[in-house]
Length: 493
Image 1 (cartoon, rainbow, N blue to C red):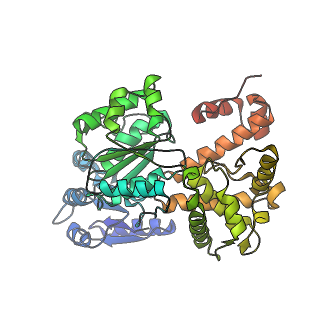
Image 2 (image 1 turned 120 degrees about the horizontal axis):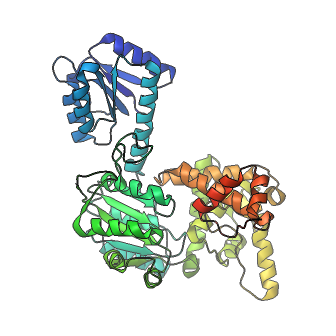
Image 3 (image 1 turned 90 degrees about the horizontal axis):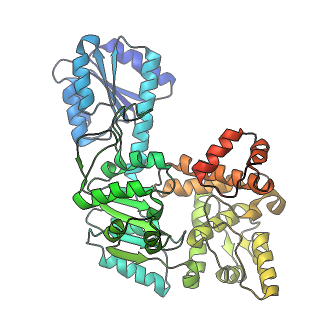
């Protein structure tokens, strides 16, 4: 993390803030005037900048203007005397994160800097993204068609709709389209519209002004602003609420939008790429998706094949994921026997590539020895294969199709390790962070809560009050969570 810059001509103010932030284990760098800070900005940037408003030479307002021109997402806190409050308001309108009025309480100052720091880190994680686009692997003819399509679209800014089953790698393709486009040096911003609660999604997309709603203590840039001049990838677009579809259509139509609570239109120079695993045509017929928005998004459609359509790629993908998992854990990569590779290639994996990756994570953590044979795979995989063979049916896969529901063989009874799922959780989090995904805590937290509540409801045959007691939460809490997470099958006693 980069240091916090303190710019003030008063040495005592600098000293107090330096000592207070040092107690919080936060690095600082101090300047006695705005000119030196501006010069330092030529070669480096802070995580947060705290500046006095009145100093000899250039003022804090001059410094604020210079920062916002070059680094619009960098939080700037202005220090001002009570007599300068009019100037502070002007600074806030010019993009300041917040202001501190002298004399200020040092604990409140640290708390404010902490809030600015959290905002800065969120912005940094969203805008930086991964340094390298993850490699898309595939030798099957179906994947070669995808590669050709990416090549044909490489110099285009056209809107693309990516379709395919869950886990087929739609975000990887979106990143590849961005990497090979004229916007490659600009931000790539990804947002899963299904993972954000409906009442927060509008603010996530378009940002909000200070005071727009309860809890909106500062102005916040939305994903359209963060993706300016770059690419905005909207995953699971089929789950977008109907009223927000109207706002998205307006942006795509005229290129302007408003922050929540805002009155000034903002210009959006953004390439939009969307993805869905749903049948959008059917959702249009069902009245769940706007037909005019569908036609706006469906300019170029790129369909990704399921893993069942490219079984010959499974050995290649398995080797790649085993090396990747081993690198994340700092261990030697496991090797698959030919028999195990042949066995995996014959499975139907409804979670596609993502499910195969999770299985390789399980193998890295749980399989004994360096060479993995069929007997070392999760028991439920091999048992399901045997049962299906006896019934003359294709073998179903019991490894989770979603990244938050792990292979059930990782449970203590099958794997012999009570905390085996922790390792899998760490691997999943590492993979999401390496891929540049934002809101990792929120996404995995919601998935964790959903898994717990669903399991409890199955245990209590859908009786949510009993489930709440078993989980140790209140009845109102479980009712709210069931609604927020979209969980079916619950009933009142």
